[in-house]
Image (cartoon, rainbow, N blue to C red; front, side, top):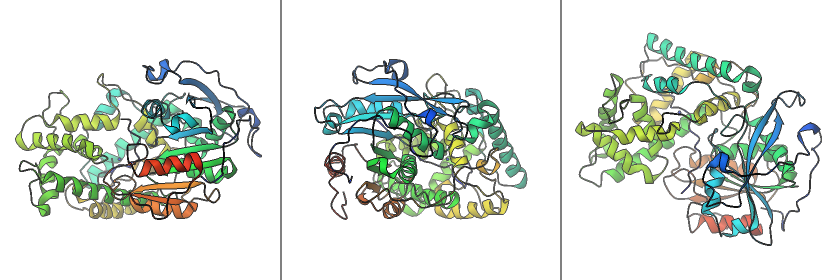
Length: 510
């Protein structure tokens, strides 16, 4: 089963993570008024997807190509970026149009996600009625140039840093690490590209891809950060949206610190759900007393600040990796068993390697020790998508709030000091400001929000649906996103909306 990309800002306590009826005709579109004409009117040369996604036996009709966009839309004739695009054509006779997908992150590859979705949705009504389309945003995945801030060895070294000392010297050391990472992004990516990496540019890119596909309108499915991209597109190009499904909502009106505090609270809720489930077993590493779950967790992971625990992998399990691995497991109940086995390894003095594997999965490190650029892209995009305070006192107060929101992530005692987020040290200015989403029109949007979603808390979905004037589907569960992952309640409602423009029942809870 394919997994979508995740929105996760590093913990502040650690400072680390349809409304229009009928089919849409496929007609070549000119540039919207005010857009640079040079980027429009392209026709991708479609070819094999094997060079991008490898084995295509499960998606034999998939086609891949490239769409070119200006790095800076204010200089349309200047340097260009190449966006990797995948298209899996509809198989039925009554094609509606394209269903464009963004899996989130920011930084996750839509090409890889659509390749997986195409296989899992084969033979379904979605497969018959829509071309399934994904493009890797600028700097991300298979698109070029890519955002790259560090070598594989530098990333490994970064993960070994506990970054838990909030004394004056410790805070200075952590900020020095962040400043070095930011400088690496600038040197390896370049100022012009880094300054134009944000969602504002990617929304324009999405419209260029739409035109290159020959579509007057798009249907869109955005997961996690993909909801933020979808909302931005709907605001800028409302008439080009036929139907939009936003699952795991990010509230675009929320400031970065407030959003992160709410996210941390979501992870605490998911941790509590995990611990309660774990406690049903007599050998739960957190014990059976709910009042001691957090304390027991700290007893297991806090010693790693002094040095990693031995694992079969010679790297060992660092403190930062133990936290990251825990966070990764909280995205889905399917990973809880690996969290338990990793924590049992710490409790028994055996191999806690499953926590290291969970951290590797989250950080996108393969078996050969090579990292994708997903985390570097995540940082680069979020740092230009909103202004971040530079006053150290603001971050000290944020640390206090974070410790209250997610005590399982908080190391030691509150010192009244905290390192500033890396985005407060970022070398290029932001290109967006937090603001409420703007509706593209009645009946065009459905938002899906999960009650115990750790990464994009439920209330954000409620707020986004209100801002967009859309319908809300509430899903009861502890996981991040749900659409097309097998829910017998959510999926039929989404299919009816996308195919027949049928709104889900008011107040639908699944």
